[in-house]
Image (cartoon, rainbow, N blue to C red):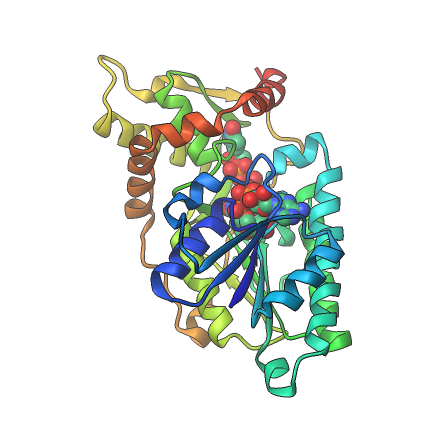
Length: 353
Ligand code: NAD
Ligand code: DAU
């Protein structure tokens, strides 16, 4: 079996669902269930013995040691993190705890477990760390996309904490020989994404007739990948990636934010028209994110060349499926928009008005 951390969050849950659609290899899913973790994402797995959910913290060493001893996974995939840049600006502490200290504790427990395995199991074991393109910093308009050897220049507390975790993962390979793999992926979108991130927030606000808050001039560029393509890339890296190596994951899909928002408005104008008004009328430019990175872009040639991975979706097919998913899953949206969510929206957007 494999151990997945953060498997009740956006990418983790998509990964767990995809994995069990394709394989009967069981998953232990360790997730502390922060505001971003939601067991409703895994509702279709209720009663499925291949999925063992454990509510717990990756920073809890005793729990990790027991889980590894009891379940003896052949691989650990670390998705667990605090993931929202704006939240890291308002309060970095949790990011340091989970992304840095938590990853360190997970590495320590993994090293201890791995060092006791039989030689053939030791060789086959993998620790796969899921990271982000944000660790590389911001690109100028004419700069080449990030390769795996691009210098680290994180600019937000979130990306700095992810950079630190990447360095720890690297060090555990270099120093102790732990067979690690690191993936650095660009912006994901798709089903089950918490509506604090750009794409789901815009869909949910538009449907509620609320304004669509575009930070700054809306010309910041992100490189978008449909979440299921990220999951297929992680499966490929786990299968055939070389320990100690880094793989950048992206779909060559750079777009300015304003174009994303306008595309969502056009799709909603088709799928759920508002009488007499385009959803575009709701677009509102608001104060920028402090230290806002201007452009991210991933050079995905290494994973394409060495592991033969390619994304299945284009941005057009992926965004259309995503908008349709949020239309079809209004109850999911209502449930995640709890009191705590409303408090966050008030805090983040009030000052930007
Ligand atoms: P998310 O915020 O939706 O989910 C994170 C999950 O981790 C939640 O279920 C949460 O409960 C859990 N978690 C948080 N702290 C924990 C802890 N201490 N112990 C156990 N579980 C904990 O995040 P996501 O968007 O699914 O991102 C998953 C991973 O992918 C993160 O490591 C993130 O840095 C990385 N990543 C995300 C993107 C993106 O666009 N969303 C892109 C590239 C990389
Ligand atoms: O690049 C990968 C990263 O992508 C991941 O590592 C992060 O976990 C993930 O959250 C994401 O970070 P971003 O900051 O790029 O994503 P977000 O959806 O928060 O914002 C995308 C862009 O949209 C960014 O330029 C800020 C802008 N934005 C965002 C929100 C929430 C707005 O203009 N308005 C908004 O209300």
